[in-house]
Image (tube, rainbow, N blue to C red):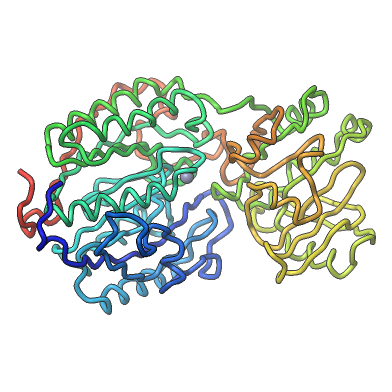
Length: 507
Ligand SMILES: [Zn+2]
């Protein structure tokens, strides 16, 4: 890119957003307090690349922190919580005055009851607030369901290229870097968007295995094609019963024909591979997973309790797999050690805290947030560990029953790192069986697992999609309509939002 001294005046770039994915099949709802809401330096501290001297491309950029809210995936966001966050974002944009650019950090699968495409509504409101002279760049999660309306209200949009999302901050940085590039050069790229009528769960589209691995790896090559600035592919979010739920492609570029051609090529490739996507690991029922774990040769054997994965939007308190574990006679007779993480149940944790370590408790746990897919399960055992809400990681308890150590937590939270266990006095590395409410394994768990299985358990993020009973999806949609005709994958060309306002706009 070419720059002149005049172009090197400081750029004012705002950062803000609301980031969550919401299962509409989870009775749990997300409140304001579920969000980590950041402002000022606390917000900028999240975005590494905003630090002084971080990169050459950030020189002469003045970052303007607005408000950024992020929550663990969950049920729909309560309307009042969403309205408060939206109004604060719009209010801070108003206070900030004219900006050159805005990094609008969204997930792409937020749900607020009564709204079918809340992110498009938010982007439209934000675009109206900043006006056509401010360029908007939107990093998202590849599990978002991205509509033409959202794409039309931003100037640049991209998504993670790895699942698990080891590149989530690389994505945000790329979105910011491309924004700065466009501001410096006056480029106002167009976007070629295609909806692909395919809806698959993340556990069938992990980039740890083919065909997603090769498909996503190819995006970097697409980005190197002359006239292309960015290439993004979304698998969509399978657990939202919304018309928008589907895969999508956006290729952003200064050459409209090339952007369209590349978008069509990616969409056609995804469509042609639709039957090749398979679960990232062996699958079975809860009973089959426990039986496989008991008879396994290699340990630790990890079971993914996937239907109630809180990091995909499940409530985190469906105790279905726990009840199978506790009732399994072969497991009880085996002498194997098992860790189960976790069931959300603040009352049960409080009972363990008041009973104290070493005492015996007789509790009913879980089935309170998600009353559709689970009901409380009796848990009797010795309290090995208990801590209150002010401890690092929040309130938690460990109840020891035979060889099974059950983790109870006060809040919905992930168990993705070894430290999440060790801080509770548990060591998954020396356990025979480790059960986690998760889908595909995050890197530390993947390294830990000598063998593993995905248990297709009931819950708000059930991997068996037809079992959930979607009613509002736009049909036909693969795999709900196996005999559907080949779709029209012609891209929609969405011109630059503010092409007229741009000096030196691209042809
Ligand atoms: Zn995701």
